[in-house]
Image (cartoon, rainbow, N blue to C red; front, side, top):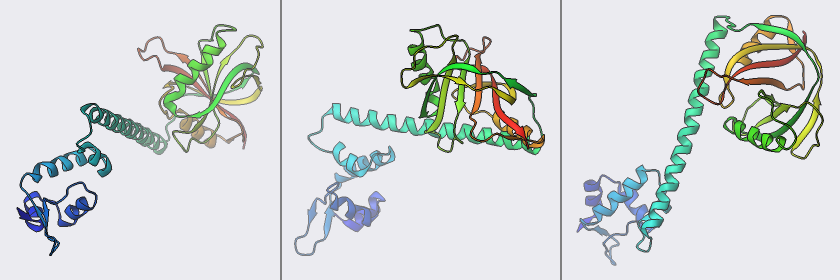
Length: 271
């Protein structure tokens, strides 16, 4: 038997942590002197302590570890807990990868701004009124294809979907998981609105700043930033309370089904 201080040195786990594990009934001492209160541990308990540390490294909480070490837990329950943890880690990895992609895009945008480069041609034009059916909700970028699928499933009862996709961005996108997105399809004739699918007429715009670029509906791009810089530098300003529009046409030469040639459209007026 080892005193708690000796067991701490051998295991390289602090005395404070061992006492805490005792309080949580996670690793009870093999023997506690009823007169002095001294804790004693056996060599066999090193195996249990190592399992605790291994589970901690995998990201399990102490409550979860206590469940994993329980005598009444089945192998299927253990397998299920590991699958849940695997899913949590994968979700975190996906979020971090998305954050990394945004950082790369921001660096690219900063470099272009620093060099005063606008690699795409900006065109000012009038946009006629358009009849559309749309679906607006708060969602993440990665959900846009699913939102379009819902819209198209509803639309197919009335007419074939147009090849092009329209996205209207209604907010400043501060929360990447709750972006105010409106997806739309052009329609040739009026059809019934059926919430959340709304038929409406997009108003005519006398002056729209536009830019053509390659994009993916599930990724951020720098085209809007480039267009905003052009607007500022050329004596225009964005008109308030007008959503940014993006018209996306599938790109036949790319294997990715979410790859498009897109036109970013921002309503402007003379500054």
